[in-house]
Amino acid sequence: MNIDMWVIAGYFVLMVVISLAFKKMASKSTSDYFRGGGRMLWWMVGATAFMTQFSAWTFTGAAGKAFTDGFSVTFVFLGNILGYIVSWWWFSQRFRQMRVDTPTEGVRARYGKTNEQFFTWAIIPLSVLNGGVWLNGLAIFVGAVFGYDMSTTIWVTGISVLLISLLSGAWGVVASDFVQTLVVAVISVACAVVALIAVGGPTEMVAKFPGNFIMGPDMNYGLLLVGSFIFFLVKQIQSINNMQDSYRFLNAKDSNNARKAAFFAMILMLVGTFIWFIPPWASAVLLPDAAASHAELGNKASDAVYLVFAEKLMPVGTIGLLVAGLFAATMSSMDSALCRNAGIFVRSFWAPVVCRNKPLSEKSLLRTSQIVTIINGIMVILIAQLFAQLKGLSLFELMMRVATLLQSPILVPLFFGMFIRKTPKWAAWGSVCFGMCISWLIMNVFTAQWFAGLFDLQLTGRELSELTTTMTVAAHLFLTGGFFCLSTLFWREDQFTKSEQKSIDEFFHNIETPVIADSEQDEFDRLQRQKLGQITLMMGGGLLLMVLLPNPLWGRLLFGTCAAVILLVGYLLKRSAGPKVVSKPQAQMVK
Image (cartoon, rainbow, N blue to C red; front, side):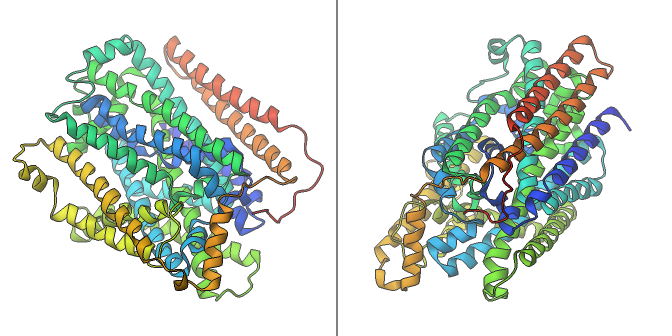
C-alpha cells in the first residue's frame, strides 16, 4: 500500500468519524435529520453551500479547459460569485424564512399540492441520475489514471456517502462539507503556491501562456465569448437561488446566519476561482505536453493536467491529497442530495399521499427517512455502475437527454416564483413542460450550427460550444421565463380555494418575516464548535504526519505550514466552544 493510498484511507476514516460524532444530534426528529433542526452556524452552512456548488469537474474538466483555453474557464465560477452575492442580498434569508424542512414543502406553500407532487417526481429521479453521473465520472477518472477498479471506486465512495447521510443526516453532511472545504483548500493553496514560484509569478505566467490568455485558442468572434459570459452569470444566479436548492440555507439557525452563510460561500468561491486554476495555467507554460501524459483518458487526456502537475512538481503525498479532493468534491454534492431526497420523499409523498396525513410518530418518520436514504444511495451506486456499462448505448443517451431537457426549465418557476406572486395554478408545472419543449428545439432544430448558417458564419468547435450555451440560457430566460411571467395574465383570485389562498399569503408573509434563534441555541452552537474543532485538530494532526514523508525540505515545510493552519482553525473552533451550557436542549426545534 503506497503513501497516496494511506492518505486517501485517512480521508475516508475522517468521514466515518464525522458521521459518528454527529449521529446523536440527528436522532431526535426528522427536522434534525433533514436540516439539522435549523440550528446550524453560518460557517457550516456557508461551507456546504460552497461545496455543493463545487464538483470534481473543477479539478478535471475545468482544469483541462484552463490548460487549453486560459482565463475564460473562470466565467462559470464568476457566475457563482454573482449568484452568491444575489443570495446574500435577497434570497438566502428568505429561503430560511420559508420555515420549512424540505424544498418541496416550500413548493407546496407557494404553488399548491399538485405542483408539490410534480416537483417531487421531477427532482428525485433527476437527482439520483445526477448522482450516478458524478460517481461514474469520478470512477472513470480515478480508474483510468490510478488503475483503481471502477466498480470498487463506485462502491467505496457510494457506501461512504451513504453512511454519512444515514448515520447523522444533515448534521453529518454539513460537518463533512466543512472538513471537505478544508481538504480542498489545502490541496488548492499548496499547488497554487508551488506553481507560482515555479513559473516565476503571475506576470510571467500570463506573458508566457501559449496563445491568448484571455480569449484562448479557436476564438475568432470575441462577441460569442462575451455573450457566453453574460448568460453564464444569469444561469448561475438561477442555479444558486431557486427553491430546489434552498435546502442549503434551510439549515441556518436564523435569518442573519443564512445571509452570513451566503457571503461566506461567495468569499470562498471568489478566492477559490483564482487559486484553483493557477496550477493548470502554469502547467501550460512549464509542462506544455502535460495533456499527453495520460493518453488512457483518450480525448479527455487534458483533464489529468492537475494530476500531471502534482506528479512532476509537488512533494510525495500530494497525489493522495488531490484524489481526496476529488472524492470530497463528489461526495459533498451526493450526500446533500441523498439527505434532501429523503426529506422530499417522506414529507411530500410518504406522509401526505401513502399515509394520507395520518398522525405519525417522529420515530416512525425518522426510520422511514433512513430506509429511503439507503434505497436512494444504492440506486445512485447501481446507476453509476449501469452508466459504466451502457456508454454509447441508446438507454444511456435517452437518460442523459431527459436530464438535459429537464434541468434548466425546472429552475425557472422555482426562481421567479419567489418574487412573482399572482400566477395561476398551472404556471409552475406548465413552465417546466414548455421549457422542455424549448430545450428539445435548441438541441435538435434551432441548433448553434443552424444559427451560424443563418449569418453564413464559419465557427470553430469551441465557438459552436459557446454559442450553444448562450442560446440555451437565453432561450430559457426569455422564452420559458417569459411564459411564466405571461401566465400572470391568466391569474384569477377565484381560481383558488380559501385554504390555497391562505397558504400563498402565509408563504409571502413568512419570507418577509425574520427568523430569530431561541434561547436553546447556545448549546447547539457550543456542540458544533466543539465537535468540529476536535475533528479539525485530528485532520491537522494527520496532515502534520506528512512532514515525515521522504521529501525535500521545501516539501516538508509546505505540509508543515498547511498542517499548522488547519490545527489553528481547529484550536480556535474548540476554544470558542466555551463551557457546557447547563440548560438541557429540548427535542422540539423551532421552525
